[in-house]
Image 1: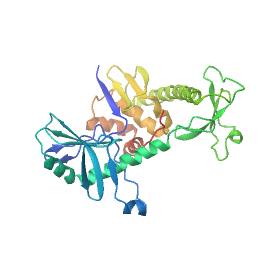
Image 2: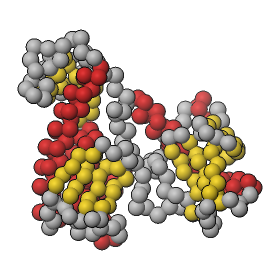
Image 3: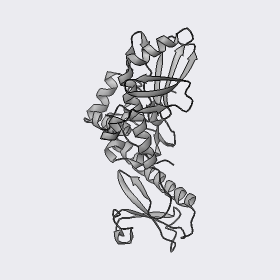
Image 4: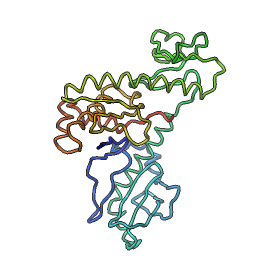
Length: 302
């Protein structure tokens, strides 16, 4: 069985940049433009510190404390993630060579570190406070959680109600999710019943989109599995099995469609070559836009 994954946050199929004869691994974050800095931010030198930093260097106006790891490899590699910068170098390279490689790519490194910090801040802001009135994204729209102890709403315990805007907190959008829970419900109960409802919606929506796009691509899918992977949006197997991350249900339908088409296209081309992208683009002509939107998303922390 061959399986092709679609990275959750990175450019898994894009060629990485190079530093001379060295090879930089694909970054763990997206290549979105760095947000403009305020005047105080611009005047204050940026500081980036890895929690396991064992080396530090000044890259332009930025002070970067990074983790240096030695290993059996042939080139110097940089990885920028949520923790910061990690440099992987062969045993035989000198510290001077490592510093030279860092300075050679200092613009790229500092930009990626800024993007990683911005993304982490957005992730923190997306963290859900599980109580009545909390907002959860559903198909790109905020949905407000309301406790409704009068009824259980069937086995699922939750129902989407777009008609009760007047009962929502001031300024809330009209979409609300009524949870059949008592006023004394613990945050974990709100979280679990909401997640169960979202996963049911994910299976319903994903199945409908797979059925819609499969004939257009001339393929047949056999089985859908919902994934909770932290680093993959989805994957496809040669036997027609499709795995999709249930958290896609947070995103706009156009972005979901891109991921669905991406995986279905793998049933024709088990690679990321030019023909594969032609197949995807034949159904999703704005794939660059949707791919960029997917890579730039900061989903709620569960």
